[in-house]
Length: 95
Image 1 (cartoon, one colour):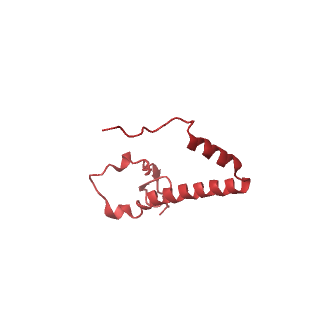
Image 2 (cartoon, helix red, strand yellow):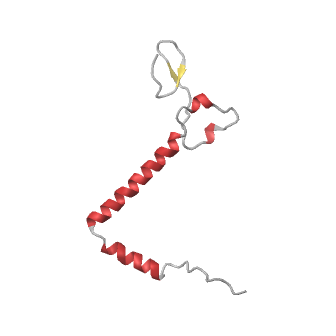
Image 3 (cartoon, rainbow, N blue to C red):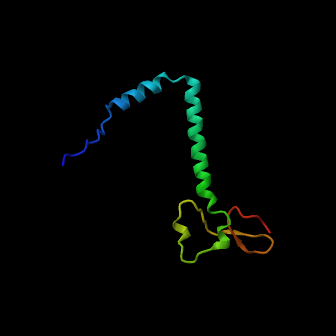
């Protein structure tokens, strides 16, 4: 049985050359639109990943190691409340 065609993973392929020519011929306005769309895509992606943490405290899982999660910032409780002397997080409201 003959082998299938192997992919040319080099940078000097015909498709890569065509893409380069296409990109060079884009107008400045079109390039700005493409950049803005990429920024919006990134922002939506980030928002979706952070949305899963909404109201997470009400579904707390004691077996999960939240301190290893790079999207969560759980700092030390170093601030003392001036009203009740309770320990609080850095950006937590007073009271």
